[in-house]
Image (cartoon, rainbow, N blue to C red; front, side):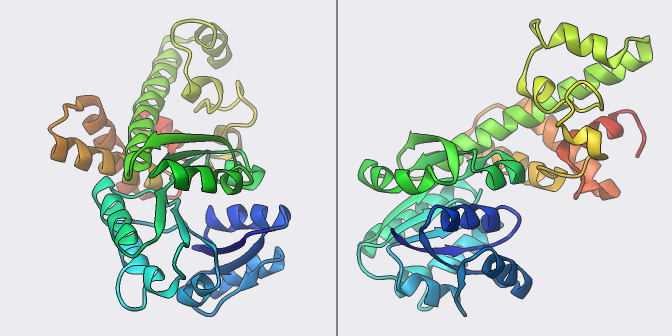
Length: 296
């Protein structure tokens, strides 16, 4: 049994931490939201009064935070996690943030004598609840080996992507593919509707032909063909449009800083920006099909 601190008990962090509790790990959690802390306590976890208090007694500290600035604030400074933890603590940041911040915080951890991994996830809230997440991990090989048994209690596919920051690089590249492909699949269904082609017929053909992709076969943006997709529950989010826009913007920032050409990624970011600005930030990202229909 490992002593684990889990900082960030939101929609993703709470079920991830709860799965560690179910796996008989000793988990102390913290979140700025009292309600989130209460829900975690209801799942059997211990709750600390501060993030630093949670980290002080831990062998492993896991964070799941909204953005790069939150990660920097949580880890760095006199009251940060690096200062609170004991020598030899392993830090695992599961937030999705910019590559530069991930590498800067990892360097600070190394300077403090700590091991650190960036380990963003794919799989959404459903994957977090079912412990079927994919972890894309950047950092030292020894730290990855140490972290793997813990990550396997929250996910199904654990991939070491290389050195510090490479987990974040993998995540934003993957989600740029996802955002582009969801728009492409949605446009195809909108065109099919205009041409009088039934949703199910298009799905039956494309799901076994060259148009096959995850956005079609697992997360189909129209009701019917894939009963488990959010389209069948009024686009209640497994992964919100707001979160997709965040990741697409991270990809564009990375493309700009590295002089990479990503015209489709840029266009996808623009489409999701318009969709979110119409008040759809909390809608599942597959709901973009409604925007492409002109439904508003």
